[in-house]
Image (cartoon, rainbow, N blue to C red; front, side, top):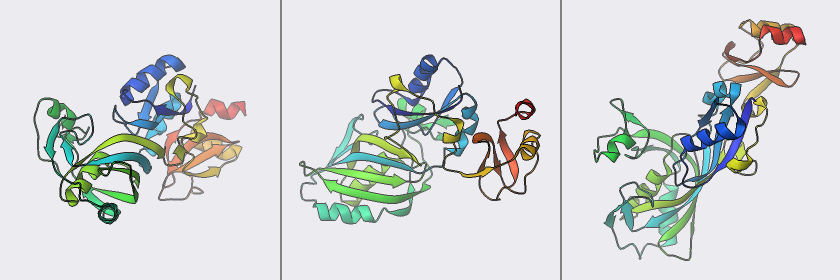
Length: 281
């Protein structure tokens, strides 16, 4: 069983939990995930099954889309609703127009400081492991890109719905906290839901218990594709360079509709078909 499983992760599960459960459901240990989701977050989680685990690195850079709620006036130590309150502000006078104006300033390339509850490593240790010990360390800001940030008020004047389309590596909880800071106080994030990773959306996602495995080509659906003939397939299985493949970005190489390899700069990065597969053709 090789391919892509698009899971609609439930709240309360870590991404590792999902992988462990999927191994039992699908009957294989060879499963990995791309794009970690926090335990409280829900939504799209991509699993590579079997040989597709070798392709997960091509999914990691894909842009992500999220929805959530920004709660003004309360900051927490985790920057989301699961944390302990650390500061409060009276932000009742903040207007929707002010929130939209400040939110617009975040669109484009910005710098974020990773939260202490993230998996980023500092001096070989993950920040969330240090945070559990009550240790806080200096973190270097990282550049991310916010492609789109839409903000809508709710019935609660301190709560705003957001929809964010952003680059990989963006922390939505940090975005919420920074937005609160720019509005003269603080904020935290709640009800985070990932609605898309690249072309993979909630429309194709399944609850874990109903997980389905799509073909290998689904893993690289976002890449340009080059269909090859039988003679070229033989070269691919030998790991040969292919000048017909465009340089500069990964390209999915297919034979009779099946994924044979992924090439980049004319050279094989992952070869999935073997010489015996050529003989069988």
